[in-house]
Length: 120
Image 1 (tube, rainbow, N blue to C red):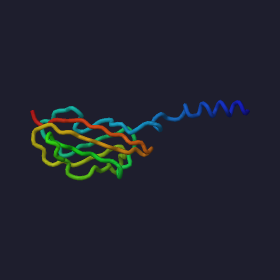
Image 2: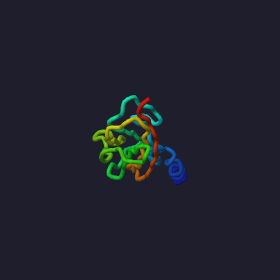
Image 3: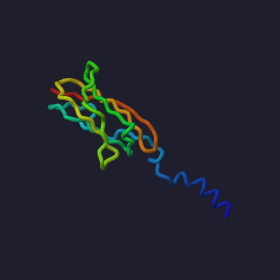
Image 4: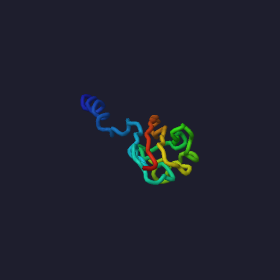
């Protein structure tokens, strides 16, 4: 019986879901990373692979000069705790950089950035 308990103790961690040990990674974005948009979006929406702690998450959107063009704080979707959104000022044609920092419910931090373009 003792041998069974030892084997079970050694194998149990392998049976736990891998996501319990992972960070929240960016799954997809609107507008998509690296995309060109014919019309300027009114917001940026980021979806992650894990639930987030919204109070400790941020999204900044900056223009080519480095000026902030997001207008407000990133907000979590009430039902989808994996999603953050931030409203944008009206955007003229140009390239924009989205910078994000999140804290997942398992207390792991992750961050990243990407660009998108407005105009031809």
